[in-house]
Length: 229
Image 1 (tube, one colour):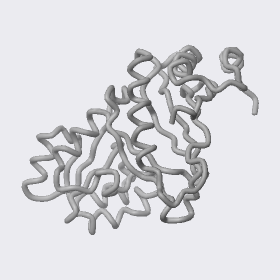
Image 2: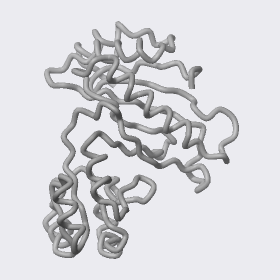
Image 3: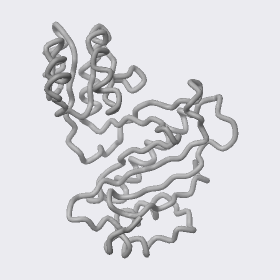
Image 4: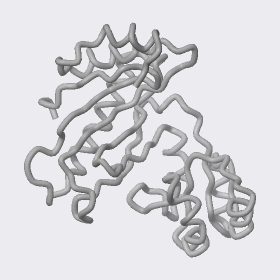
């Protein structure tokens, strides 16, 4: 894969044979974020899970202490008093059945997270083919199917992120922006790792965390030592 000059220059600063301590890796990921925009710092965690088995799936959510640095637009499906409650909590969009054709037929997807009260999941289920592939379906494990819409919306706005295995059994999540202080990213990274270690499925045998890599949106990967975790 052909890389640009900037990427190649940045990659020279990273020793691919070294597993760095988290703070060193964060400093390098920040240093190698040279794009003209505020790049996202991402963590890529390869696990020893086999996601084809239901008892080795990982899915959950964690509130990053310093947020993600991204403004998140929240859509809440609810009815009755819960609509006003969601609006008061800061939801960007609220509604019910009337939103289905807008999403299905008009392709409206101007939101990043969908929250639904349990009594609305029958309605939201009709959007499975649209929201599912984009990872937007509400899920009780991620805290996005709940009657407590106030807490759900406030947590998401405060920097709650969802983590789950992809098809390669890797978890990809944002842990901040390149403009964040190293300590802020480290706090976010530690909160994430604590949640993932706790979420280890009991059915997983052998080494749970195979590798951890940090990178900025356009930068090279920096390997992190898994020994600590």
